[in-house]
Image 1 (tube, one colour):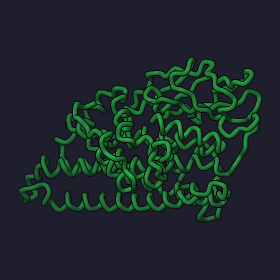
Image 2 (tube, one colour; image 1 turned 120 degrees about the vertical axis):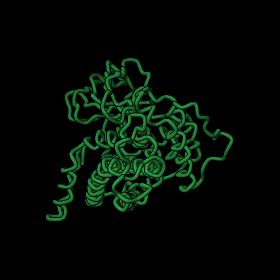
Image 3 (cartoon, helix red, strand yellow; image 1 turned 135 degrees about the horizontal axis):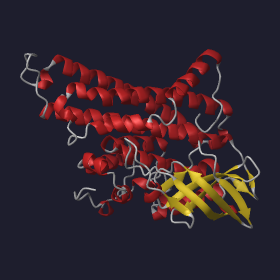
Length: 405
């Protein structure tokens, strides 16, 4: 992490409004931006970056104010994620996943459980990770008296080594019941592996994890009362909620790519010798490209904000969520996920057309924006998101709740 000294936020009052929290996120992004390219190349575990998120108070954004939280809703959280991702896509992803896992107790757990989790997490500024990769079905949960014991492996565990607590998921032996629980990340038997070596999102600590008899009390099994799960339709809102997290750090990365490229064009790009213009910023095709990409990004951001507001209405009244309102929301999320994917890939790829050959130097780090977007947009095939929308349009078909829809 850079030696740049960031603001001592402890001497300032905590933000009180959405606008103030987004401004705080912009301050954090300004710190991250100073050496983002160098940190991306180094690929070191982002302990300092997570400390920055904690010091700025961003990790408690969704927590109750009476316990030191920000008291904000998801519409603000998504904007904060987007702002941080402009500077560093990896840290934007870490923060977004943290918000989802922070909220997971409320999505799945009983009122008593989530009130306790949110209070402790806010007071102690916990940072959440999650060992919940749905493609891996090899974590088995067994009973041992009043304890649950998790054993197995997950291929991905975003936030692993930098987290204070980790959300676990496994299947109760002999049943089809999935059980979520939150455990300290230094729990005995929980081993995080240094095997995340992908082309993008290098600082997300998304490597594998082994669970060798990790124990947690039955009482901590989210949503279970006397060992029986208490289902609600609201439980299934975890997928569209995190898909909107994806949308917003994709758009943040795209916004950061445009801002960084524009600065390069203004300060470093040379006009083409046969173009007849002294400055690159006066070349018509350069102006047109920036205008085109900006318009597309703004349109996607506007759709993302609208869909976030629709989702917040469901979060505001969880018991009123029905299969239809949940399904209609998922279709809207699928639509903006598809649009954000296309826009972010286009922006992060086309910026080189208007920055020039010299901008491909490793020292500039402009490639990190495309690498980051390309890596995470493969999380689940965007064609299946378009299919959800198409089936809804043609047949009124609602997406069936799955790990990906």
